Image (cartoon, rainbow, N blue to C red; front, side, top):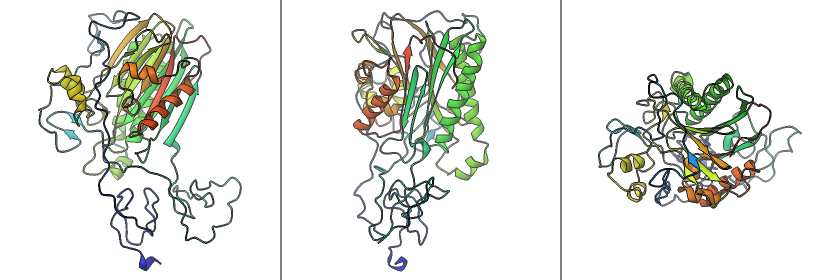
Length: 443
């Protein structure tokens, strides 16, 4: 049968390079013995061209969100926290199209969208196999496609050859009063997002909760490892700083710096050298996080992942608490385009800030707020906010009982993104405000 198979140079499903004699694609498990007609075009990532909700309406924040004074004052040191949540964006890039490597030297913009096959469905078992092998012994990992073959150490079925879903394709976690869900989505072949949740106690015995969400840069080497390393390093820093009495805003700043160091260190690992390709860069990711105490809400970020505030009383206005480090935000801030024009451009989601060894400058953004009413904090990647960009759209998607059922709400929000098309990995954490009184936990 092997001699009758067409000789293919690339997989018809995911375009992974093939070797002579391959029966199945090593990346997606595609059965190469039955070659379908090639699609007429290559799918591209659909972008939401609608203008964002913006962080706050003209004239300032909603009345219920009042930012307290900067805890460090005007005479702080070089790394003292800014008194404003506004990101310090670099000078605007030229108006013409940006070409070249994923990071353009002229603009400092990284294009975080590598071409992806349209979908990665599970392939049905080969109908030409008359009879499968005997049922594997109890406790043996069984193939999710044919339900009969044993899965080898490399993650492939010994019966039908299908590549098995990775552990990170769908993750859920509840940590006390907070919860998060992450999903691969419908268009990516792996999940490059990561999150970490944590609970601890402040020196006065009051509780503090936090959520850190990271989005791997697809055009970089090992983006999934970068996001995981960053989220864990940030969580460790918060768990170490908050109980010692460090102000939550300063603790968030230090957590982002720790996350940056963790991602930078990946560039020197042998695994990065093995996976490096000429069109790729050092491991990189974005980061966004939130710390909630009984009276304070702190956010911090680098990149285009976001934090939204959704009050329990839906008659009160919601708000977006972060400003993207992105090409579109840079164009709007420079007055070169309005929001509708900027976000309709194909370069809208090119990021201008990230964590990684090839980042031009680490510029952590932090801000603190004192909401005067209960609500929930939504911490998410663009895989969700692409389908609920404005603060009002996000509030509409958040269930009314989100504060009482955070895990259910996170699942609903991930489902909202998947129903919208699932073009990207989707990660969302739901953190009630204020933090309920309870014992300390860990990430």
